[in-house]
Length: 216
Image 1 (tube, helix red, strand yellow):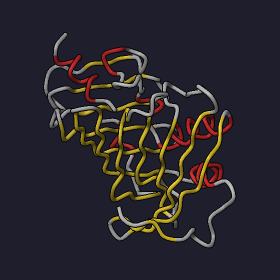
Image 2 (cartoon, one colour):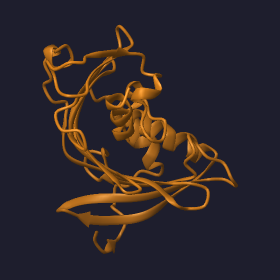
Image 3 (cartoon, helix red, strand yellow):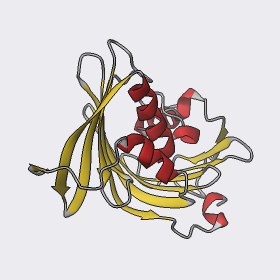
Image 4 (tube, helix red, strand yellow):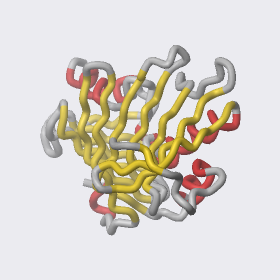
């Protein structure tokens, strides 16, 4: 997701089972509606893009505060987005260490490998992209799976024809059957090649996140 932006800054399952009995007719719309009631969350994110692995502790609080603590590949790096100022503060070598960068979220130094921006990095933005792809295509409910002791609903959303959203033609999405919070997402391009795989572990929904967390 965002590993390449720091590189630039530093340089200048299990078997499928039956459908869950309460699966909504449109799980993507249902998950998005459920997300709109979420005030905050923290989650452990691991993403895989080609031969690059990224590990981030991610914090979000309405109306759009974001904090990313990088564990891999740039341990100690810290990024904070403030929706009031619409600016990103980045400490590539860790908080309190020079330099501290103050950047626009559109700055190419802090865009992810697929063009992701800090101000559009939350789960809501992901679900909105999947919803947009669905409206130009379709969503298939594959079934319920048990992964890591969690009951997950597996969906596949594919754009019609060559339709894509942000370069993604197909999303495979695994939603927690209880919370409807994403647990895993695989994005594919028009040739069906995997663009990125993202795992979201240990989510804490409506976690208590003090204001100081986003204003270090």
